[in-house]
Image 1 (tube, rainbow, N blue to C red):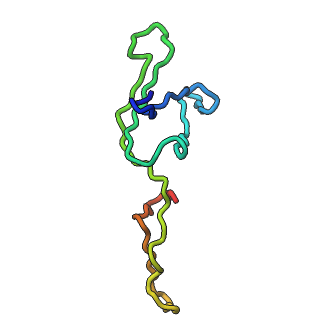
Image 2 (spheres, rainbow, N blue to C red; image 1 turned 135 degrees about the vertical axis):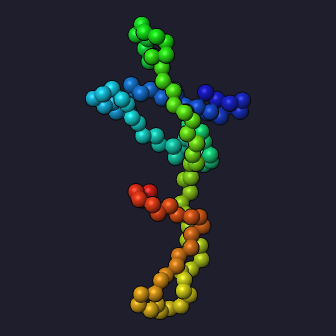
Amino acid sequence: LEDDDGKPTSFEVDFAANYAEESSYGYTSMKWKLANFVSEGTYEIKIETKCDQLGGPPDIDMSSTSILSGVIDLTLPDQYGQVLPLRDTVLLGEELVVVFTEPLRCEKPFTF
């Protein structure tokens, strides 16, 4: 789907296509490569599925998730300034400090 300016507001994905992986239980998972398709920013994602009608109640042939909010940040942090302390020699056990242009997420599992 597109907005009034012709920019995509949602993407249709075929979970039965060759790029989707189906488990033995019939669930499908996919990895999205967003780098060349969307710009950086804050997004809301909602997944809705419609299956072939099998003759049961209408709500059994579809599923919908709640809205997930997130940020797509494709810009790598850069080193800001020089490594501290600013001298040619460092004492054994002395801490070195490197400042970056944005906070780093250093929780496990590591994402960098």
